[in-house]
Image 1 (cartoon, rainbow, N blue to C red):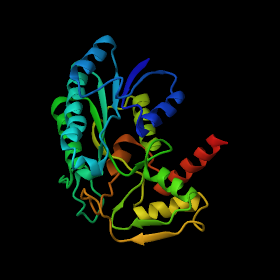
Image 2 (cartoon, rainbow, N blue to C red; image 1 turned 60 degrees about the horizontal axis):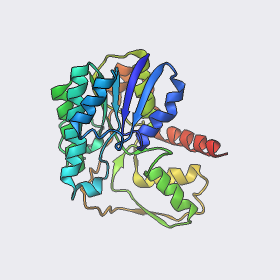
Image 3 (tube, rainbow, N blue to C red; image 1 turned 180 degrees about the vertical axis):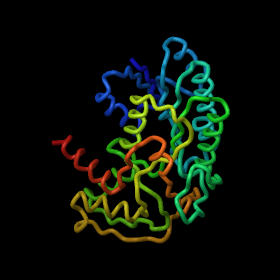
Length: 288
């Protein structure tokens, strides 16, 4: 039986893994929240790995508040870089495969075509810089790892754009959404599904990969599609904005190329609209 540690299990990606875990009775999962395992403390990580061997470690723990990271740089780097270093070192010494998740924000957004894994990184905010440092720590210290850069994650769990728009629609709010950024909404369930399939198939094509859903959109396009599939497109006033006033700079273009993940890992990547529709109706069914 494969043993799998999942850190940051209380976040939206961790919850997606927990939901999908029921489809893998042959796996022995241990889900840990930050209160149960603080990966910033190497002694805690080492103690856990000393008590139980893990074949795989899926790190869902992350500092994800892009805005607050600008004023909490030390905390962002502590979680996204130094804590990741702890995991990489312990996984290496324990012969454990490490799965880690990074971001499209490692790029500056000046490209015109989708970013590939070999493109030059140049983060323009603290969050992106902290995630890039985490990548570098893994590459330096571990030899068995998958790093997945992803973008615009959403799911039925936690705080994300998908849930926020649905909530605003229920409240009958007027929405003014930016068209200033182009990227790809990514269903966190699809990312979790990819990782679990890799473990099940014992895929060893390790390395750095880009994963998001297919297609591209602005945040306005994403909101418009959410309102459309939820039946709120005629009842909610949605307005375009070419501005996006934030503390942190955001890449204007951050679409990721999925060529490597499709060719090396043989994974069929669904279009973001199709995946969004599937998630919405499965969430509605679950409530009924």
